[in-house]
Image 1: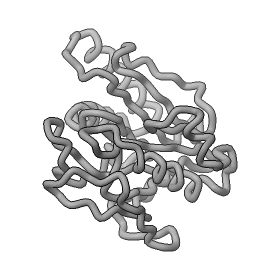
Image 2 (image 1 turned 135 degrees about the vertical axis):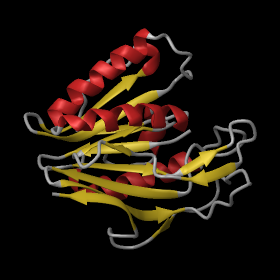
Image 3 (image 1 turned 45 degrees about the vertical axis):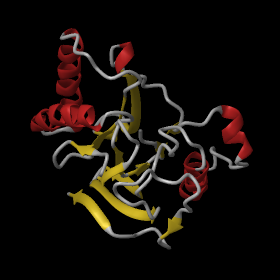
Image 4 (image 1 turned 120 degrees about the vertical axis):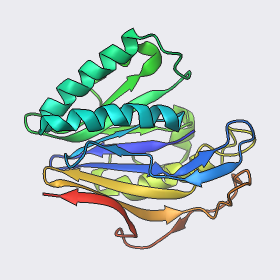
Length: 228
C-alpha cells in the first residue's frame, strides 16, 4: 500500500508521497522508507503503489538507464528495459502501478502513469493533477478541496491524505503512514523533504484515527536531493 499525488507546473513537478512499509501478512508497520527511486543525478523520479520490492527492481533499471546522461536518453533506455521485463511474463503483483515524473530536455515538466497488469504502457496525456489514492470521486468531492487550484496543491493534498488515512483498507489499517514527503523536480535537479508525519509505531497496525502532524512551513528535514 502507498499513496502519491503529483502536480505538473510549467517549471517543475511536485510530488507528495508517504513512507510507511507494512507487513503484508499482518498489516503491521515494518519500516519507513523513501518510496522514490531517482535516476542518478538526473531530474527524473520513479515511484509506485504496491510491493516496494517491485519499485526497487524497476528503480534499478532506471538507475542503469541514467547512464545515458540525459532525461530523454534515460527514458528511452528505461522503456526498453520495461518492454523486456513485460516480455519475460514475470508473476508481478496485482494492481501494481508505476509513476514517473521529471524535467525532460524536450518535454519540460512531465508525469506519466502505467499499470503493470496492462503491460506497463505509459499514459502520457495525464492532467496537471494526478493522485494515486484509495478514494473514489464521491469521497474526494466530500473533502471539499479544489484539486485544480495550483497554489493549493500541498495543503489540498494533505487534506486528501488525511481522508485516505481515516479509511481502513488493509488489515483494518489505512493505506498510508509514516511521513509525508514533498519532492520537487526542476530542470536543475530534485529535492525531497518531510513536511508532515503520523506517530506510527513499528510492529503495530497503524490507526486510521491517528492525526497528521504538520511540521510547519515547507522545508522540513531533507531526505534526498541533488542540484546541478
